Image (cartoon, rainbow, N blue to C red):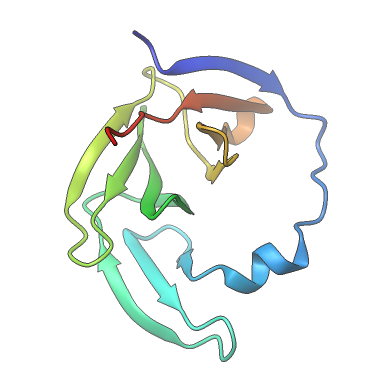
Length: 131
């Protein structure tokens, strides 16, 4: 079963994020690097860094899981990583030529993946976990 659901054409603008959601954000990426940083939301200080073997293009935390997108050359994927060790626990490969330029979870079982210069947002089903 494919996890890829659909591509939505972007209108070119996004609503401002909810202030409360932004306040609890604790992960960030450094532009064009293979790192995920845990950031103190009050002070803005980097608390620790997780290394990746690919460029990190977006990070999201949902239901106690840390996920990040990657994009290099013609290959992209979305990865669930161990928040302590950085070990890749799961990988969702995107179709060849599909870039992931941002990543967010909708809180309802799906990821929204920015599509780079394509003008599309891709919707990807997040794998279900056993109880």
